[in-house]
Length: 243
Length: 243
DNA sequence: GCTTGTAACTGCCGCAGCGGCAGCTTCTAC
DNA sequence: GTAGAAGCTGCCGCTGCGGCAGTTACAAGC
Image 1 (cartoon, rainbow over the protein chains, first blue to last red):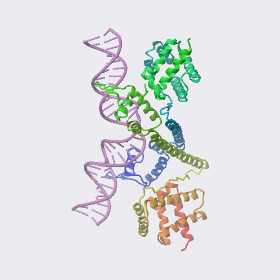
Image 2: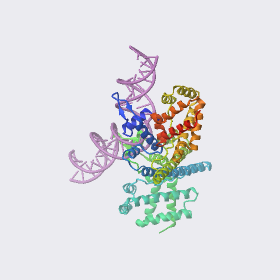
Image 3: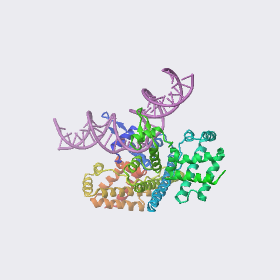
Image 4: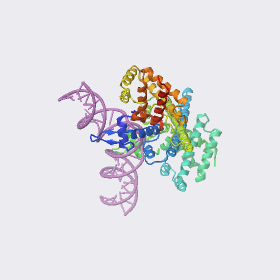
């Protein structure tokens, strides 16, 4: 009658959502009017996308249906918004791919992850910084004082800066262009805020951009050639600043 | 480095999405730069919501990434729209519940399933019509000539008519009100189009609305009291028509 | 060389909501 | 009496891993 398969009804019995009125000595499940009515309620809630466990809560424990529905709607809207922004991101990615394909600039596409370093823990960073022990120490002390949220914010900021540099590169600016150099200067200021850096050290860091596979991979994940671009920009910066 | 757990990497190996560069004699998985780069691609696609099997197809079989992304976007938008209409439906349901709660008309809520009879096959209908053998036969012959789509359209129409009657009831019209009687008249015309019906038979059908548990359940699923309302309306119709 | 702590491994259960199958029993109809 | 339909139990499958148990391997300190 309800259009549900027997398998589904058995499932609803298994999870206790809709036990039959009685079970014959032959094991057959017999349903009566009361179950039909409850099933209709179940179907309505299910059609609204409410989960079966939630439906069981509402029908069983007499949880307030209205409140449950409002909760459910919030989840629906949140999920819809998530898909919406996701679709927008996909749309931009498609546009980027199309443009780069048409321009013949085959691979200037820029990936825009929210947080490239998501999940990379300070310990991993130290690992990557082993070529620069003093900086590793300074970085460790700095992160130790930060909350998890602050750390993540910093990671997102670094990712965003890398994306910004990729945009400058995609726009065709040479590594020693004014816009690029001011970007690098901001990075340099942030770096020296942690600890003073000699020119020699700075050049070594620049080389690491392409030579340290982990750093390089991170840059290349944003845009192909970005690691070399960052290195060139840093070297240009170092050359222009005898200090 | 990537922030993925070891468990996840093992999973990706299991499903063949990202096999390690080599597996040592000790069973350990070793990854190299190439895998890191591929992993970055995987993460980007995953962040876009592409499924793992789809990602494997794109990276493995060199399926056109652009086309795959467009497909994926269609799915995203379709899902978003589905959630959107779902949220709107939930919103209406919430409003209905709130109104009926405020008015003190405690349970005049009307369920509006798209097709209450979805999945009910003609055989089931015959079952319900066993009290009226000639009509069962007539109904069988009529449905035998119809396509599946026509049958479903008819079911949706009947559901819609029941919802309409529920609205008349909720609006407070007595069973013998003009609007209700003209609704019943339309039903009567549709019924007699199949086969002539005596007044006796018609009264018997009216009684079935509340006495046949299956019919009753269907009415009650739309709105409480609807079965009795339909019966009363039909009896009033029969009384007003001595023919 | 031995121990200890850490980390890697395999393999299984769990999640939502059933679909689908195998293999068995029961009902219904001729 | 018998055939066919329909009911039953129980297990695997899907997605994308998380979590646990039990085992082995490696790095570091004594």
